[in-house]
Amino acid sequence: MKITIKQIDGFLAVAELGNFSRASKRLNIAQPALSQAIKDLEAELGVRLFDRTTRRVELTDAGREFRDSASKAIEELEHAVESVHQLAERRRGRLRIAAPPLLAAVVLPQAIADFQSRYPGISVQVADISTEQIVESVRSGKADCGLGTFPSGEEGIERVVLMRDNLMLFCDDQSPFREKTSIAWSELAGQPLIALTRDSGIRLLVEVGFETVQLPLRPTFEVSHIATALALVEAGLGVSVLPTYALATARHHRVSGRLLEAPTISREVVLIHASGRSVSPAVSAFSAVVRRYAQKLSPQEMT
Image (tube, rainbow, N blue to C red; front, side, top):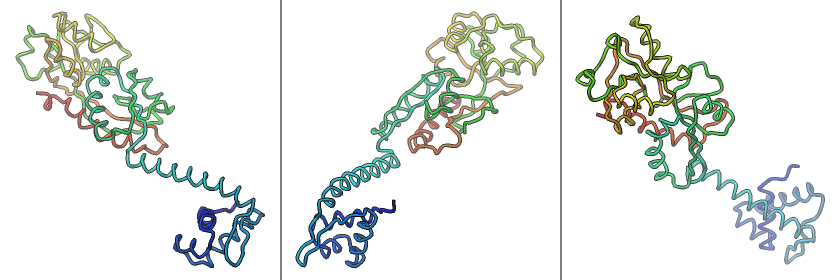
């Protein structure tokens, strides 16, 4: 089928005005060009659309039927174009975000509030799930983007760096470490350690730190959640090595965070989206907003 939008627009203008001359003026095209467009349309459809007299152009039965269908098609097309324009201008749409529970709690609320104040027509959904679930949700399209720290070998995702996260030591108010601004890994010798379980990426980095200074890693407690680790630290049961963004939660406990050095171990907190797909305007806009709030979680910004 070789029918064009220009032909349909010309047909509808003639049908409304009943006159080729007036229709050509409205469309700002030459009358012979409009007449030829209508002839081509009739040839493509295989029917006459107009009965032409010296005074007036009138629709045939086929023309009236085609007018009704063509008008609806043009209206739907205009609506589709307007919808895409609104999406491109971030005036409407949907954004589905996946993040691990702690990051979802400490960075997303303010970032989403800021985002929605800027783009009130975009609805936001949040899934606070594990890292493995985040990657799969983004790959499958269940989530438009994800936040977190992910192994460098993950396929099917692309990354936007939001902040660099350093491992820190968290101690209670009675700990001698509280008087220091930074602590060397070697100083953890003999300290009761509250560690995350081995399915955590943080735990693997802690093991690297202990191996680097040739200390045995023998946790006193192993827990799955950072909030639990902080509660145990607050109770004086040991110290814990956790990511920088745990500082936001530590404020609600009698717990202090101190930088760990020699070595400094860090990782990137990133926003991910599926590779091979165009990035939606909503994700692009949210990326800029959430980066500002993620960077506020660094120790320098939180002091």
